[in-house]
Length: 153
Length: 153
DNA sequence: AATTAATTTGCATAATTATGCATAAACATG
DNA sequence: CATGTTTATGCATAATTATGCAAATTAATT
Image 1: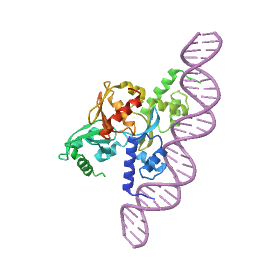
Image 2 (image 1 turned 90 degrees about the vertical axis):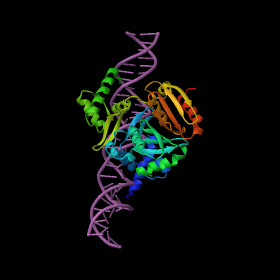
Image 3 (image 1 turned 45 degrees about the vertical axis):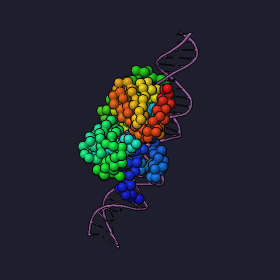
Image 4 (image 1 turned 60 degrees about the vertical axis):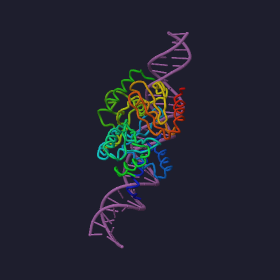
């Protein structure tokens, strides 16, 4: 029953994205969300995943919602910037990078230091970074470069 | 069965202190801790209290532990968010939202949570939020959606 | 390649948390 | 002060989450 490590990373990665994007109220909902993204799993596994990822369930106006915690697995995160990144998206003019809460600044600084990958500048908030390209034509290449640099897919 | 408000405040107060001092793993343990401090209560009541106080349960090396959340009691309510927004403007590529001083972060978080209204990401400063659309074609629609969601014109 | 060790997963279920309902105390109103 | 309303609480239980265990697969070792 053991799964490949890559699959686990993949599931964790998707998990993080779902949690940071949607409002997830319970783990059965999460099973369905993952299914929609083509990942099969069970409530039991997700319970363990959430624990490993340091995900918390916070009370909101709508009810209890899962969130990525800033403090959660702080120790694990410090070492690799890659682990701090949740997702990278773009539109016609900009690149937007989602990170764990409070991590945007650190990642932004890291990106700024990378010279010659086509970045004009970055702005980091709490958990979001805007990357401004030297030219909108370079957006694709920049994303590729970041992924290569960080060794993520 | 109603209790005096003072008692409730008192219990909440003690609750917060216990949570920030000891390692609390579950609510029955919490019932006992409160009892030791002379406060009688039940698991059900504490479940409600924890929700009201915005307490989260974080996975740690020892297991799940209750913690006071950083965001504390400030639950994002629609009506409150609406009041914090001063203006919404756009240009060809971005949407800029002005808020009352120091409120941008909160509003930005709220907007991030709204799924499927076409927002790629947001960055909040002190009193300004930049909203990046999934596509510049969606800018108008996003503004409409925000206004509808918040019930403002 | 064969064998062994290590790890992940699902199932079943235990443990824990959340909540509808009824009730009673506090509060409001006249 | 009497009466009506609101709200917090406990009980019982539903809903949800965590976990022991066995099975199955991968990874390691020979």
